[in-house]
Length: 93
Image (cartoon, rainbow, N blue to C red; front, side, top):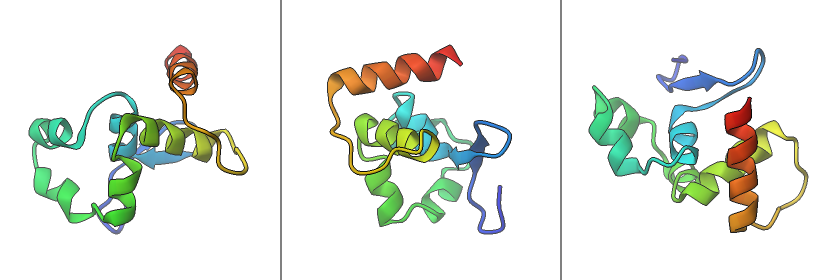
């Protein structure tokens, strides 16, 4: 938890990602995340429009994760094969 009460997951020694983006990339939707959270109001308090767009779909969340940690330039095209490949790489590590 940072100073702004946002919750992060550390994915490497130096890098972290929003727990909402990570959960969404792993297949959960916002409703499932909030239902399973002990204090859902904490998640809702820091959920702004930008964050909602990131977790709007599983594909968007995977793309956000990929852009942050694979240092991809430009706007890659989201496809089913890209999502499957990223999930495979993510769960192998």
